[in-house]
Image (tube, rainbow, N blue to C red):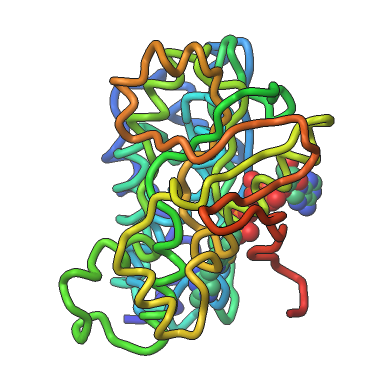
Length: 333
Ligand SMILES: Nc1ncnc2c1ncn2[C@@H]1O[C@H](COP(=O)(O)OP(=O)(O)O)[C@@H](O)[C@H]1O
Ligand SMILES: Cc1ncc(C[n+]2csc(CCOP(=O)(O)OP(=O)(O)O)c2C)c(N)n1
Ligand SMILES: [Mg+2]
C-alpha cells in the first residue's frame, strides 16, 4: 500500500510508536516532549555540540541502495560530525521529504534503518518532520555533549603527525562498480568496497578511545569531500603550517587500483579526490602518539605537519603539490 493512502498523520503515529519502543527509562516530561512541538534535552555537560547534514536521493543514494540503508546513512553522516568534534553523540532530529508513491513497507524500512543506527551509536531520535517531494530527501540535526577537550580544527602545531582511521577510496570505487553492475553480479571480494558506500560505518571505537585520551589529538575532522579537500580546509584554518603526505602510506583496499584502471581513473583520484569515507582525519601530538601507539591499531600515520605553507604529496618518484579538488555540490565540472 502507498503511504499516500494513510497520509502524514498516521505515518508519524506509526513512526513514533516504533521509536517509543526503543526508548529506555527516561524522565516523563522529556519523553512527552518528544511528541510535542519541540523536544527537550537535559543539560548534562558544559557544551552542547550541534550539527546538521542533508542527503538527497539523486546525489547520495545509488540506485542499488535499500530504504533501510538510506535510513542508516542519514544517522551515520550526522553522527560523524559530532565524533569529529571529539564529543559524545546524544540525539538526532530527522526531517524527511518522501514521494507519495513510496509504500508503507518502504517507509517502515527507512524508519527501521534509522532506529538501528541510533541504537548502534547510542543516540535518541527525539523529533523530526515529514513532508512530500518527488525524490527522497533526508535531513537531520544532531546533538552531542562534551565538558572539556573539545577539538577545534584551528589548533594544529608544526611537527604533529597526520593520521587517518580506516581506508581511503573505497566509496569512489564502489560507485564506479555500481554504475555498471548489479550487486548480485559482483564477486564476493568486492563486498567490503560495495558496503563502504551503501552501509558506511563510523570509527566508533577509535572515537571513544580519542575521547578518553584527548591529549593525543590537536585537531580532527571527518573525511566527506575527499582527503585533499579536507586537508585544504585544515590548511585554511591554520596559518604558517603545511602538510607532507606520504603516498605509500595511504591505506586502501588493494582491489581498488584495478577498478580505477578499468574506469580510466588514477588511483589518486579515488584516494584523494572523491570522499564519503566517513573516516577521521587527525593531527596528533607526536609524543602522545608514541605513548599510545600499541593501542592505536586502527590509526594510520600518513604524513606530518611542517611549516611549508603547502600541501605536498611525496612518493618515491616525486614531490608534488596536492591538487585541492574533490567532491563539491553546486559546482560545474
Ligand atoms: N546553510 C548554511 N548556513 C549556515 N552555516 C552553514 C551552512 N552551510 C554550511 N554551513 C557551515 O559551514 C561549515 C562548513 O560546512 P560543510 O563543508 O558542509 O561541513 P561538513 O563537510 O562537515 O558537512 C560548517 O560549520 C557548517 O555548519
Ligand atoms: C548517487 C550518488 N552519487 C554520488 C555519490 C558520491 N557523493 C555524494 S556526496 C559526496 C561527498 C560529500 O557529501 P556532502 O553531502 O557534501 O557531505 P558533507 O561534506 O556535507 O558532510 C560524494 C562523494 C553518492 N554517494 N551517490
Ligand atoms: Mg555539508
